[in-house]
Image 1 (cartoon, rainbow over the protein chains, first blue to last red):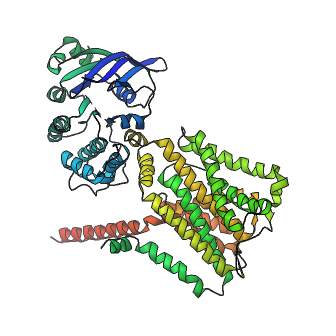
Image 2 (image 1 turned 90 degrees about the vertical axis):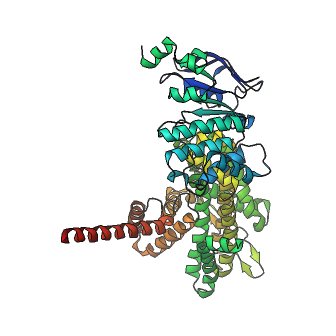
Length: 236
Length: 336
């Protein structure tokens, strides 16, 4: 069953087509990777799905168009996202960051505290709840952002470059966490990532974008061995 | 357990409230000081309501003093022309300001920062022209006076009856400050902070930014308008001179000095500025120079305002201790 379908999605910034005539589908329950060189339109695509920019074409989520919806409405439909640079609510605690997602994003929860507790345990932020978000390290910042997004109880999670700036050990922990979110919570994940090793380990399918267009799509092992993909990455 | 936790957390505010409640008894004979304290409370509430908008929600509304004046005129005019009792006219001032505040918020929904400031300050500028043009009702530059005041038995709510009037202002101020405190600590306040700290993230977590912008405009304008009506009733006059830039800057300075987004910093700022301004009054124009110098010094030393004073002292003490330790260590090393 398809959870997300993009149909001829185009986003122009003046003359520049950041995303051009893009068609793709994401299956429910899979981890779908998006890769490509800088400026390929990966983050723009996330911004289109999450309602940040207007666009032409259509995006269908669980059989219904989400075209023209505002970001908070898209969240209420069941799509959550994280950002490339951690954009936390820096003046409040880690707990309140997560509470923000649980309170405003989740369908009316009977036990908000219980939901937050479960998510804190899942991502491994126990002990950091009362720390002001500005004072936690980069990995915990990324975890807090992810936890807040999960607190909205999404069915589709968009994760933008989650391993940027992390140590190999933290990257390893992130990979395990994405598997856990996908398998234990049953959340479909679309992930943008530069580290091909991570993509191969995590993703069921991988789409390569180049100049805003779909270049190829398939299993990560196959895609990364394609001569043209190597050329794109090496600028050939 | 819970009660003692709340008491400990709010010990400063509760202590200050107790002092403010008892101070007039000690000052009973001093009408001048009582009126200054009343002014401190009025401006403290006005600045705190503005803080809700600028400091907590980061909605840079520069129409706050316009809302205050709208409340003042609504209070006076409904008493004068519609014969509404003054007790009812004061909340009506708040309602009128809130309605206008929400109407002004509508074109601001898609704007941010300085653009909201420009639109709302435009309203501030237009209002004085409107008051001057509508002179048949507003009496133009002369303003309105001589309207009926709140009366309780022999006591009239007026600056010439300071003891009774102080407690009326104190009661209203405590109630409004409590409302502001509750808003800040509610999920509405959480949404304001979310939109202030990171709007894209807040929106992606399901926060409807338009709804909360309307709420913050509505609440802060309501409180400013209500205090405007109360101020007008207290002093018995309202005129477009209240829209002078000096009033606007004075309240903004109270807010900045106390600390943006640091309730009850704005109240502290209001007390400091109002008392200093009165104390320096004999110096005529020089008082503005001295006030300016004090504000600049405080802002350089404590950019986060007076509410950050305990943290500033702590970090200063820590630095001094560290320096002493380094000195001691270097003496030890050199003696070895």
